[in-house]
Each structure stands twice: as C-alpha cells, then as structure tokens.
Length: 327
Image (cartoon, rainbow, N blue to C red; front, side, top):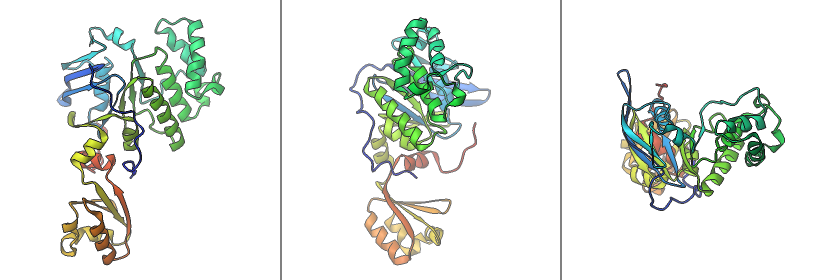
C-alpha cells in the first residue's frame, strides 16, 4: 500500500468558486437490464483536476464516453463551455483533448506525423502543425524521437505522445482515461510532472485512475462511484478525514492473522476503532496508535508498519476489498 498521505500534496490548490467549465446532471444509462450509471451529477471548474475512482465495472468508462458524446445517456444533461451535448457535440469536442485507455497512435506514422495528421482534423494547416509539433514534442520530452514510429517507443513515450497529440487543438479540458496504466514508476512520475504543468497553465482535467497515489497527487477533488452511482465526493484530505480513522497499523508475518481472530480477548479490539484482514495482513485503524503499538509489542515480535490513513484505505472502505471482475 502506498503511504501518500504523509507526502506534501503536489496538486494545484482548489480553484476559486466560479461557473463550472463542464457539468453533468442526473446522468442515467442502461445496457439491457444493467443500470450502468444512476443519477450521476458532477462539475468541473476552470483549472481543476477532477478524479473519478471506483472498482472495475463501477461505470467510469461509460460516464467518460457520455461526456465525450460517444454514448448517449438515457436521461440527464451534459453541458460544456456553455454548450449542450449532444446537440453541439462538434463544438464541444473542438475544445476537448482526449487520452484514451488504449493506444490509438497510427503505427505507420512517425511521432511528428502523428501530430501533424491529427491537427488536420481540427482544420490546422500542415505548416502550422509542423511548427506546433516541435513545441509539443519538447513538452512530451520526445524531441529526439520526432522521426521514430510508435513501435520504436517505450510505453511511457507512447503515453506522452498521446498526451501531446491531445494538446494539438489547445483544448480547455482534457479527459484522460487511466493515462498511466502499464507504465513503470519513472514513466509515471514524468507523466505526472507533465500533467501538473498543464494544470499550472490553467487547463482543466477529468481523470479516471486506479492509482490512489496518482489521484492524491493530481486531483483537487475526487468523485467516488460504485455500481453506477456517486458514493462520495470531495477533496482527498476531506474524504480521508470524513471516512477514516487518522492512523493505521499494518501487522503481517507469522501469527498476524491470529491477532485478528483473538482481538477481543487480547484487548486489541478495545484499542482499535476498526480491524480488517486482507491476505496475510491485518489492518488496525485507530485514533491513537501508541497504546496499540505498545500492546502489539507485548504480544510478540510482529512486523508492523505505522502510517497515516490514505486514499487506498478510503477506496477499500467505500468499495470493499473483494476483487471485482470487469463488468
């Protein structure tokens, strides 16, 4: 588990109150008898990063597709930049940048050609795009790879090229569907740095992610959805404070599971607000860790980790620890 709550937040400060750049109201979507999205509402302010988190099958991708005009909601309303979706979808899409979960780069074109050809969809001339491509490749740290084809790039380079391509039309709002999935830690951190730079430039971002450290680093607010409906919304720190005890002690190794089974007679249950077991690890959630640590020390030589509560704890409390299959 990542210990992100102890780190200084990297995300930009929450934007001042102002008219939303994007708003979804009471969205509903059915696929046959499956109610994929239920009365879902949210807003995105100018300069804000809104993170959407939830387990597999929660409705994240369906929600994103409705926001992009790729799936029509059964009911509800979507407005962006003062325009209505789907009636004014083309005008809205001209101001959006999209990085999908899967690679959609053209394998037959070089990096610079991928940018130039994409720019043509927005009516930009080849001359203008060639000039802009240099700037975008520099932003993506891909100047040296300008003439390389996607097949010659690492996974992190491909994701940065996809991000650069999403910026071709100078969008006001970026929609990113799990943009760092499959990347190694170095590539993820470089991607985070580029997204931070865009937020500092005043771009707005809608981000879906399964990485809680990514959500905590980038997002001003989080929307937690499960089974198609909103179950929580707020800043990362506010959500942690509202739903969790502030301190966590993880106990693992030989004999750890027996602690959970005998928590009441050993006195541990009285010292912990909540006790959970995942695999071979026991999690003690508490508001006062020192008495619990002292009690554990008297019961044996256990391996322990004392840390602040974080977004991963929040996610697991709100959505459960059971693994979900894709819906």
